[in-house]
Amino acid sequence: MKVTIEKIPPGSEPEIIIRSNELDDSLMQLIYSIRSPSKKLIGIADLRMHILEPKDIFYFESVDNKVFIYCKDKVFESKLKLYEIEEEYENLGFFRASKSIILNISKIGSVKSVFYGKFEALLKNGEKVLISRQYVPVLKNKLGL
Image 1: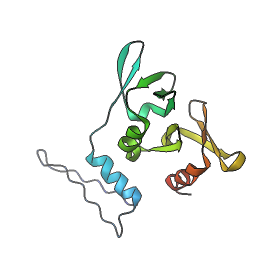
Image 2 (image 1 turned 120 degrees about the vertical axis):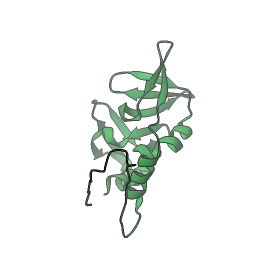
Image 3 (image 1 turned 90 degrees about the horizontal axis):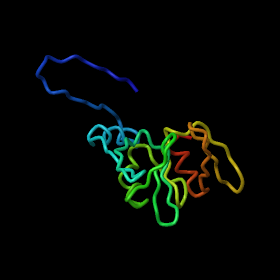
């Protein structure tokens, strides 16, 4: 993909032009990320509400009807349901890894195949997360494999 950046006169409105033979998923995701404002999340810890950036989140996990947000070294509780998070943040690099986990693809350091067609993701913070075999094709697609 070729990227061209041109300086414009002060006061002019910035413009983005995309020239492509076909609008594939990666281009659609790029367009969506440009158009959508930066989405913040609210995480609750120590009786305080914290404003979280999606890029800082490693994964979301549902345990006992509660949803937890896992960052590099801190865990927060979310008031959102897992399906709401999946719908809202799917175009920001998050994907369903199992029935109870939504994973940030940019936080995966490596993956390996484990038993019964499942994958194990080693995250950049050292944690290991299992990816259910039914979601392995989604991961492969997102990684371009």
